[in-house]
Image (cartoon, rainbow, N blue to C red; front, side):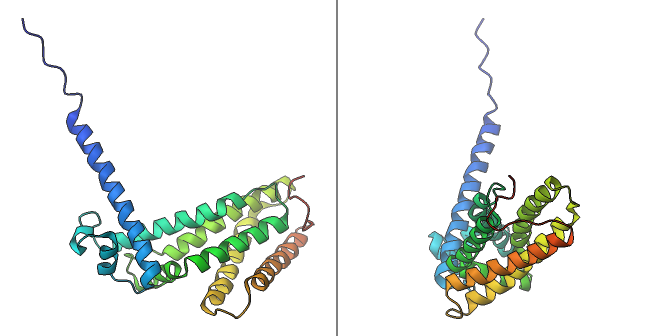
Length: 227
């Protein structure tokens, strides 16, 4: 009797997995090309310019994205990843308030300076509805506020205080920093980086100190949050 044929080992599934992996890699490559095109051409970059940067025909992009809206959402998602990667090392509760505040401000201003065109692109496309109603700027600010909320809540809880203050305080600070920093980036020369860092950091510290005193807590600028 002849031996039974070897099982297929799920070859169709294997091909599907390889195709899915290749599809995701190509999408990532196109997003990288889009970021480079935005940096070069500014927030009004066209899909044609993105395709040229990627070295493909414009129609080729839409074999991997259902349309401009999905491409824009993928660009926005990468921007959130970039911001998170930039700031994640700073969310160490072992640092002093000064280290955390100044480090975060410097990183945020650095990101906006380095990726000025990307942020303007996201603002413009979010406002215009070109991301199918998706608001990338809100996502970025929400990601930063979420990190801060966790940090503040941890500190307030350790100090025996009500943690309800953490969320509104975080979102308020992020809104202030975002508005001040964006205006600064749009007005080169208004303040040198060092002075802008001191201004924003000092303002954050003043707000934090006031709000914490209101709930009976006192912290020192140069002492670790957690002893």
